[in-house]
Image: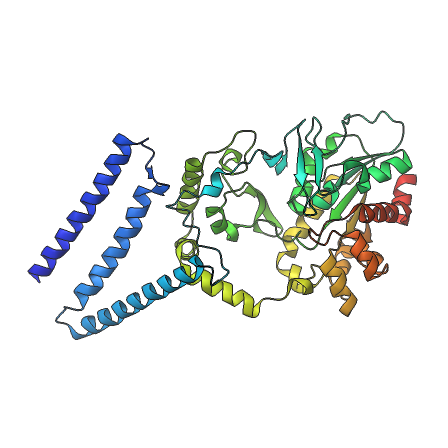
Length: 462
């Protein structure tokens, strides 16, 4: 027993000396940030020390005089060696592209090159109130999957729109449009976008507050904090069931250990909830603008997020961030059990039921904030939802939305059956198949559909 303890002590001394020497080299002979060759020294040696400690304790247990401890230690050691071999096998499968699965992120101890990638775009986490927005008075060309590029230009308010005044000086009604990339017109020139087409045909200002990668809580906050500052009479709110139910929520906190982003969410039990944000401050976001957060700072944010997790979340984080076996298993599980993307429909209850409360609460808050305006909600299908609807004519979402709209005196326009009625050949012309957003033909069709809809006509006449 004494010889075993002596060996443990020797290994421990060697381990800590190695740690101290490498750390001293980094502090005194490098830049002193605790990172060497993209590796966070302290976190890496903590991982290594924990694994080494568990391994040595298991070996010590096999030398115990107590049968139960010797047997259980032997079994545990065998399991540990088996798992290490499986990890190594999965490492080889992923490393040599035998399995088409992403590598573990290792973000707690490894500085990721992607964190230092060029993020000089006009989109980012800009607003402390609603998060994702654009830099004001900026422009850039957005590459489209077709090989073309589209000029995206923001005005002094950060809107992808021409310059607008807060006051309505036209003597006509004014429309504010809220939504995500389908409202923004992500892959079309500005003059081909449906809101511009509507403005051109009516002579009525249609102010565009669309921004990509957002959902219902953002629509509410953008309207509350920005859009309602502009004089307007009508509010058009675009709903995209395909991803409007993907709001950030507390249970997704582990995901911030890969890319820490600043997202609003409702915390609590509905209807007793309060507005929270995924990070303590917007400056911690990897997408913070106009400043650019450095990779070492991103890892510090990740470390801060990690220490705020529960024990169970930390265990999940360690496995999902570092295990090749977990990554392989997740990849194979998705291939075996996952539904084909073309079968997906956000209009079906199995896609939205688990997040309905957050979605509905956000829309209710928007409705109450715009209670003195004429409000129209309209639902936008993507191509896979049109195909799914063609098979079973199933739309579980619209009846729920109609009840909510009736409660607040809101008009509802469902584009799913309207676009579906045009036939499959037309759908292909309305959507860019390599991207999924509307083409100029799709933008024009939606503009005409809304202009001719009784709900829009009534709102503009009242």
